[in-house]
Length: 182
Image 1 (tube, rainbow, N blue to C red):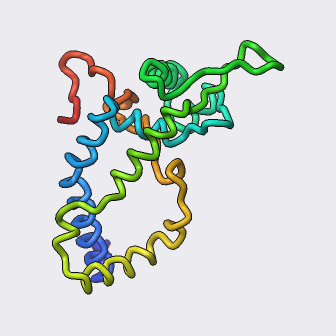
Image 2: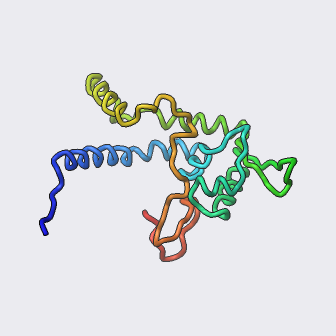
Image 3: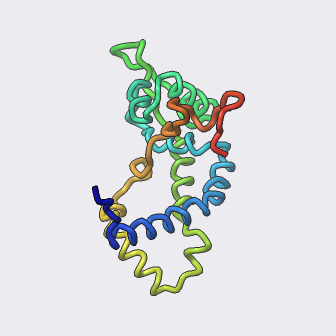
């Protein structure tokens, strides 16, 4: 059977994606510094992005949205509550169900974090204007609706870290002897 070689287009796309990804990873320290000001982990900020100040979500919906189990979702919400960024509320029709909402402090933090995350890193500011225009044109083809994205719609799953078939929150201490991804 003949081995199929990647096409020139696929090879070029892979190289471009690798460079974009590497640039994003290399600027992580800037995003981490923003989160440190709020005493948050990346998972906390992702969780904040899925909450709303008026429309509460039950823990089961949060766990499903975050791709985790209820105990991890509870742990994240407990942390956000301790920081005054989220609040559990009961509903009149079923006092057993708690809905989680952003507090005004949580909304302000989320907006400030997203504003800081969207500031261009120094490496981008070093590019010539014509290069930035070309990059913007190219990226607009990949994310045509990006200008309409709300702060809460641009994130992924806060609990997507998987190691050895197990899920864990990045804010938790890994078991002794486990690979913590460092």
